[in-house]
Amino acid sequence: MDSSRRNTVRLLARLTWVPLGLLLLPLRIRRKAQARPAEPLTISLPVPDGLSIHGSVVILSEGSEYRAFSTRCTHLGCRVQEGDTSTLVCPCHGSRFDTEGRPFAGPAREPLASLACRVDAEERALVVDPES
Ligand code: FES
Image (cartoon, rainbow, N blue to C red; front, side, top):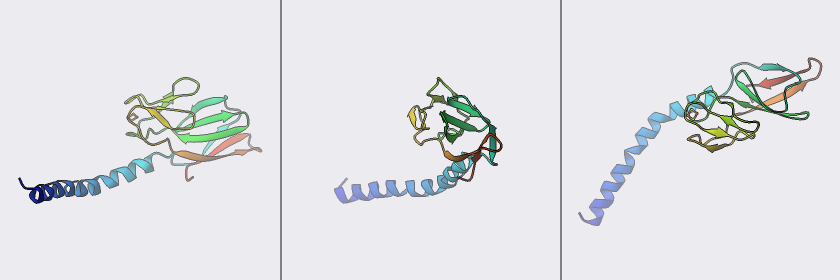
């Protein structure tokens, strides 16, 4: 096969991936949308230091500082669980996430969705905003 013919075949082979990517795009968008809880979540304070799971939200508590993440694994959407004090584990395919929600093992490549949260001092509660 001459080089121009080979290049044409390669180009056609690459172009077949474009429609496939367009077909899969809605799945990626839906998966991202599912990564967030539907309604604001109010969690009574205090929460334990370190990682703790409250429904569909992971809370990282360090003194009076709080961070919130979705429990939806960014691989295929299973709910992550507490591993040890500094690790979250997905039971489906074994992805592991650090305290910042970053994946460090397994098939997940994207971090857990970070959610805005604030302390409601009057209610002594942590309010997690799913729209963040
Ligand atoms: S869904 Fe979590 S690792 Fe696959």
